[in-house]
Amino acid sequence: MRKQGLFILLLPMSFCSMMRAQTSFTYGGLNYTVLSEADGTAIVGKNAPSREIFLQKE
Image (cartoon, rainbow, N blue to C red):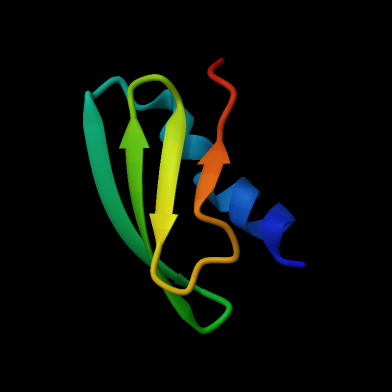
C-alpha cells in the first residue's frame, strides 16, 4: 500500500488557509489531482488509491 507515502506528501496541504487549493503531482508513476478544503479534507482523483483522505488540522 502506498497510502503512507501519499499521506506524508499531502500533510503540508493541511496548513493551507485558503478556502480551496488545487495541486497536481506525480507519485509512484501516477498523476494525482488534489483539492484541499478549508476543513482539512483532501479529495484525490485520477488513479488515486483512495478517493478521500482526511487530514488533521494543526
